[in-house]
Image 1 (tube, rainbow, N blue to C red):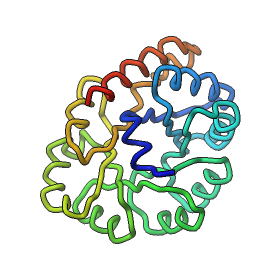
Image 2: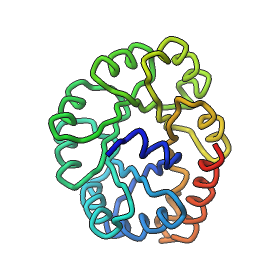
Image 3: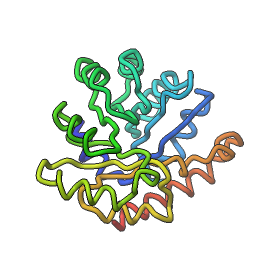
Image 4: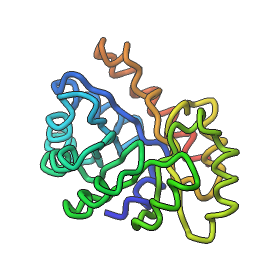
Length: 211
């Protein structure tokens, strides 16, 4: 899988925190139906690996990956569950190496020029800029690009992004996509309100198409 091109086509990547793996398949179906086929299931919960495996098995049109991969063991668990890609909120060379060894396309996180430099040295072509809004938003990314654009690096900002500000990020050519939790609100997920989630996905997909 070409992770950068897959993410660019999607434009918006739902960042999913799921406590109950039984909700994974209907959730993924709602997101795909709404037009968002690339999904990041975070390893913040014990249900993450089972949720990824279920989506991979029962929603083949989805491209499901793993987020919040903080340790080599998490990387191994994500790969074993069938994750198509991995994402981390920060840069850890040990985790980057584990992803390479697992053959898992990987996007490490950065928030500073020093971290970005290290990520590039480790072979990253795309980085997660996190927490995007708190770390300076679009202005910070543009400033980083002033020094690093020549490297060809691309960005996936996540953190504080929503329907109101996502277009500002997507207007920057080097920003491949935006990650966000707003597409899957906690209350809608708890209530099995798939119609609301599908509508939010459709709104996000429409915004991404108009970038």
